[in-house]
Length: 136
Ligand SMILES: [Zn+2]
Image: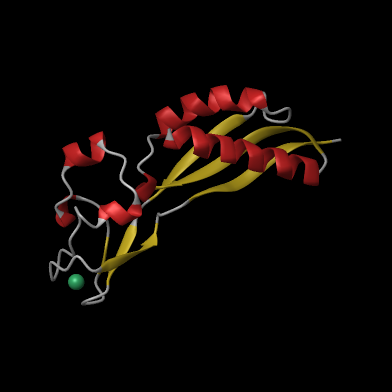
């Protein structure tokens, strides 16, 4: 599952940073979830709670997530838009499927010129924003 791999990557990153910075353990980790990844923070949190036990420095880490809203730029008219009702992205679709950026273009059109030729300028990735912990 997509979320497992991502949660694992986040824990691995935390573990590496902890080693690098001589942290006894990671107390808190802030993760930014790009809207395009379509991950529910609640689901991610639950998986993180399991995955974190596999790493020595993240066993009691508190996860803080925030969503970075997607920003799409139309290649045809230069319009910048988000993924919401205006783009015709149906609610049901976004609830039910895990779309990846490449398949996103099947469902999204530029609200201005209706072009499907756009690129994602924001909200695509998932990254660790901040890590807090006690040093040795
Ligand atoms: Zn356009």
